[in-house]
Structure formats: C-alpha cells, structure tokens
Length: 459
Ligand SMILES: [Zn+2]
Image 1 (cartoon, helix red, strand yellow):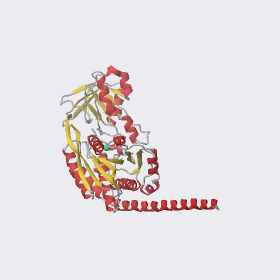
Image 2: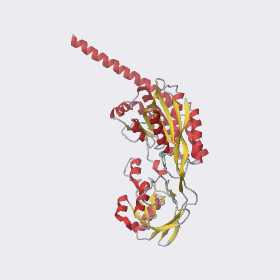
Image 3: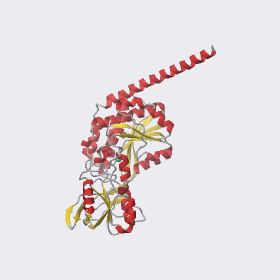
Image 4: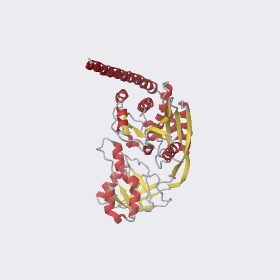
C-alpha cells in the first residue's frame, strides 16, 4: 500500500509538472506569437534604418553623422515607447580620412590608376607621394621569414579568406591578421607601407576598409586596402616575374579623442527592475557607405525590441535595456564607458546580447556563459523553431559586450545567415538597399522572444 501511495505521488507530481510546463509553453508561445504578429508586417525598424542611412549617412566616430545619429536614435527610442531614454557620455577615437586618396600601379614600368582605401586608424602620407616596389606575402609567418628583405619596400598582405569555411566570420577572423597587424609587423622590418587584400568573400573591384593598430615600438607606416580582383591581378603579375611598384598618397590622420555618446532606452522591470538585460548594436559605422548592415541594422532591431514588447502589452519582470554603442569599429570607447559605468553603479547586468552580423535571416544564438545557463536557454529551443532559429551551438557574442563577462554577465550574439555579409562589409556596398525588411524583423522577433523569456524566468 505504501509503495502504491508513493507511486501515485510520483505520477501526480510528474503529471502536474508536465502540465505546468506545457501550460507555460503555451503561454510563452502565445507571447512570442504576439511579438511576431506585431513585428513581421511592421515597417518602423526598416524606416528607421532608411533614415539613418539616407538622411544621415555614414557615422564614423567623431563625425557629424555620428552626432546626428545619436539624436536620431534617441528620438527613435522615445517613439518606440521606452520608459526612459538617456545618453551615456564616452570618449571616442577620432580618425579622419581626409580627401585626395590617389594611387598608381606600375607593372614593368607601365602606369595605371589603382583604387584603394586607407585602413581605419592608419597614418596617411600627408599628401606626399610614397612609392616603392611591392613584396607579396600570403601569411604573417612568410613576412617573418623574409625579415629585413622588405626594408624600403611596400609589403602586400595577400591573405585570402578561407572559402572552405561555412562560417564567413571564422574566415574573416583568421584572414584579418594582415589588416589588423600587418603594418606594425612590416614596419618592424623597415617596410615603408602596407597594402592588404580586402577582407571580402566576393571577387570584385571594391576595397574594404576596417581598423588596424600600430605597435608603439615600430614606425607608424601607412596601411591601405585594395580589392580582391586587384589583389589577384598583382599576385599573377608577380608570379610571372613582373616588376610591380605602387605609388600612393593620402591625408588620413588621427585627431585627439572626441566626446560622444551611447544611446540607451529601457523598459523598467516590474518585479526585478535591478536585474538588467542588455540588447545592443553599434551606432558608428565606416565612412565608405551608409553602415546599413554594419550595424545600422543592429541598432534599429534593438530599438524595435523595445517597441515590440511595449506594443504587445507585455510587461517584463526584469529591465530590458537597448543600447546603441558608439565607436565599436575603431576604438570601443562606447563599450568601455558602458562597462565602467556598470561597475561604478554596481549594476546587475545578468544578460547581454549584441546583433552585429548584419540584419540577415536569423539562424540561432551564440552563447558565451556557464553551461547551466546555456542549458536553460536551450530548453526553450522549440519556442524559436517557428521563427527560423534553431542553432544554439555558437559561442560568439559581440565586441561591445564581450568585456561584460568580467562582471559575470552571460553574453550572447544573434547568429544570422552570414553568406553575403562579407561581400559588402566595410565597403561602399553596405547600403540600405542591401537590407531586407522581413529578414531584419525576424531578427528582432527572435531577440525580443529571448529577452522576454529571460525577463520571465531569469538565467
Ligand atoms: Zn559591426
């Protein structure tokens, strides 16, 4: 009899528990469907992006565009219905391209124009012509092998993105060594400039810019990028034994740091307002285009998460905070200010997610946190399937939130279909027309759903 009672108790417990679980599953499904129904047909985020791209244009840190974008997104957050909207001051890198970038290539003495872009944070030539023969390297170790043989030359880092990888982000990370550190390493051996193959997955004529950094122990030589087509052509000529030299001039330079802002909007949590969930993108962009996919898309999605939750009439228990980070591209001044402020205020940033892979079709979430937290998020996987998100195996978060791990924050990133991202990333092709409204909104829906669940169940 005792055994039977015990069994009845166990079965009842399982039944009640399963029922409770399925009841909450249904409840959560309904909430997410509400978010989706409101968001998928919506044009607000898309029109906000159009405004950022077409009315403001590029938003390089320290530029007038960046300043205007601060005001514009402040207004957008208000319109979205955020309970509080405010600016968080930060100091940002102020690098300017200047005008008059010009280059020629000489192949066996034959002169032809060469299209290039200075890399972000690079020194320019002060409008003086720089000319030297070029030496091609396919890897950093090849440069080290050549050593002082590159003295007085221009080193050409022809490091290709590995097209065998399914993850374009992985290929970008690996091949990016030339852009990030090429000039510093070439200067160590006496080179006078560095040319890098653009980090692009397509073969075309567009140079892609991006940030680079110097090493204070070596001279600050100018660094520029050329297109993938041009890189292939130069490589072919060199293989055929041609004498190839490049002549170029530029006027880019680094100015003293400038004051700017992160733009922040919040929905205050109803029962646990001190526990904060951050969602963010970065407001600054490179100056060759409109910064539509990188990362205007992430900003308008973050704003739209606020709008969607408010409009669905959902009241999160924990605070949801959308942040437009400033200066991600070439200094991370915004991220540093956010972290510093959180430390000072002893904020409980329990979770943060960044969307900085473009507003493409979402596939999943990168999760960088303790295993039990990952497991908790993964237990909700089925709720996301109707909205195209299925992959919870990634580990990447975002450059602006990664350091929040120091505070114990669980960080995540929206994973999207990245096959087209690096065709246009940091080039003149990154325009509003490249963003699809429905893909953009699907990203918003999935992030809003994730934030809603964490606001309800914690992490
Ligand atoms: Zn970005």
